[in-house]
Length: 337
Image 1 (spheres, rainbow, N blue to C red):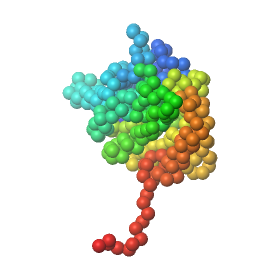
Image 2: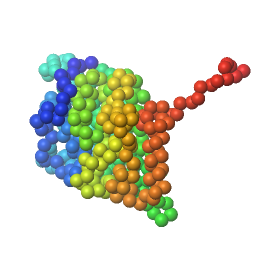
Image 3: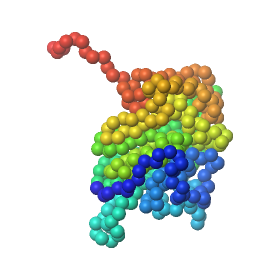
Image 4: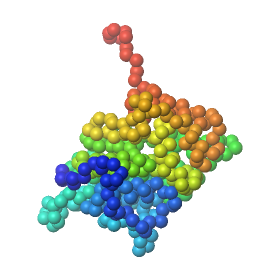
């Protein structure tokens, strides 16, 4: 395994690096939280970084002809190939250094993908990348809960009942999308037990995300961070509320902030305070009714959402992570034969 950079944890917002490696030149929508994820991600990683991006919003909006916001080397890869590109780049760097064709030094390799390119189409490639313990790489999934680049189609990360171009509410069937959001980060952690670091994040808590990126890059081996990204276009709200909606997703208990470090779960921020009983979860209605994609919801739909959150916090083996309810101990006292 190659050595890693010395990237200490950032103590307070005043100590966040001022250097910008994701600058002007992008054409994301006003209020785009995914653009903020890119900016914070590369701020934390620093200049000695190679960024790889699969097809999606953060590819299309960042590669207008002869224009790019990236100040570091970056490469586009196909929709389902973020994991493959990360592994190939890390392996290529290791080979070049081993052969003496380039200076031996730690270089960060970060691949980003949307929920379409990570949660859906790129899942197998991500899984393969996360099994290569010999390479240092980070995969960041920026999740705006739809195929937003191609006009808001449902993805495996889209929430129940959401209004999208593939699931419009109608008179006969109000909620076409009856699937619940795929539980991505725990799936990556449990399915790849040798992986040392998995985390969830939200750009509304920028310092938390900065430090998670740094922890991932300095842990060594393959790592994974899943971010929830409010999307004004896909979620149908005024762009000025992006930051607030990100906070509400966590404060209602719908999105949970945590890290899994060497198999140990650590809750962060409001999620930690909620778990300890220091603060109460806000009603999920406050989050849902701020978005036009849920404007068709009736009170029974909101109750269904609230009940699901209660279930994840009260009944799951580990709240928000493992959707299994522990069985009762068998008190029969012996064999059944």
